[in-house]
Length: 203
Image 1 (tube, rainbow, N blue to C red):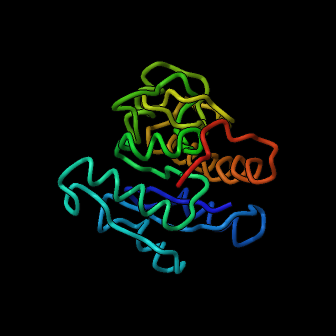
Image 2: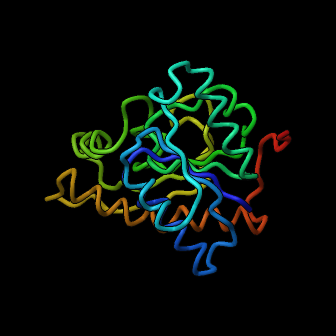
């Protein structure tokens, strides 16, 4: 199973998945890394791991349709089976979404369907969880659809929300769970325990 990563920032979830591939815990191959941020940590990690990597963004492709096609072409060129969104801050274009429908995964730092949707990312999620007085939070791995954080949830890992939590301390606890749950879900897909629901016809 070949994995294609889309990342915007540090790429720590991507690194956790790469490490699982290297250890044999995940029977998959990191095939390509694509980022909309030419200076991000994810591209540095890709370089260090000798994984093909590309900066594809509105800077490289001002036309949204051309950018969408460039991302799809890179995924296809490297034989990607599963697309992994690892902190990718942009919405995928219709061509990539259509061709990889049902084969795109994301991890969200809350227990969906709570605290999802447009604008709910990073610190904003944890601030909202604390403001709502929630007793627990966690990480959700879900299939990606056309709407933000609306695809079917595959698995969740829970953490307690502590009385003295700040957005930073809660984020750190949730991130640990993200690093655990994402490779586990991918291995269940690789082993056939979790079926890929979507259209796998890619030419």
